[in-house]
Structure formats: structure tokens, C-alpha cells
Length: 139
Image (cartoon, rainbow, N blue to C red; front, side, top):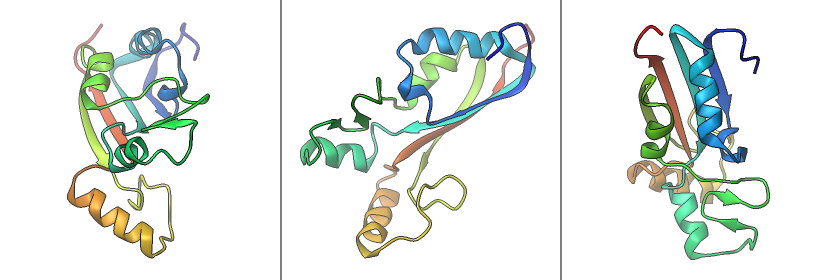
């Protein structure tokens, strides 16, 4: 991202969990946002059902909850996203089910995934955590 330009909307999807210095990344996003600009993204949901199941049933030794090593560096929950971007943006975070028509990652679900999706929806523990925000003040 060019830091000498300002942007109306800065979007990053499935990116933040790969960054080793999220504070610096968040600072640059805030610096590059225009007055009344926005931010929009999503990350794996560390408080989601999938992350919970992967912690208690470790089938993949490279994975711990929402983190898949060596690709993912950090995991996020709503208060972490708020901490990173909440001083600059009025944020809304939301749960994303795996088969959400807009945000989901899977179009056709088998029987097991339909059950999983239903349970995660009831628990408000979606696979991903989405967020969107509008800049709070002119800077």
C-alpha cells in the first residue's frame, strides 16, 4: 500500500492473520484512509466453532484453533480487531458462517457441513470474523 496516497476504502480479506506486525499494519491503514474513509475485511474467527473443534481434536499438527502454521501468524477475535482499528474507525464486527451467501467460503455443503453450519449459526460461532468501519473524524 502506498503511504503517500489516501484511499476511500481499504479492504483486506484473509490477510491480517499472515502479518507479523499487525500494529504497524493497522497504523498504515489508518494513515492511508481519507476523511470519512472506510475499512473492510475478514479473518479466521479464533472464537468460532471450527477453531474450538481444532483445539480439542487436533487432527492436523500444524493447526491450533484458527492458526495454521506456518502461514498464519496470529489469531483474532472482535476485541482484537477493535483494539487495532477502533481508535480511527467506528467498527462493526460480525460472525460469518461457512455458507453465508456473501461472505462464506463454501457454496455446496455436504450433510456434515450443513450440520456444522447450522450449529455454528446457533452458537454465533462462525468460521470467519468480518468487520467494516467508517472513519470517526477528519484528520
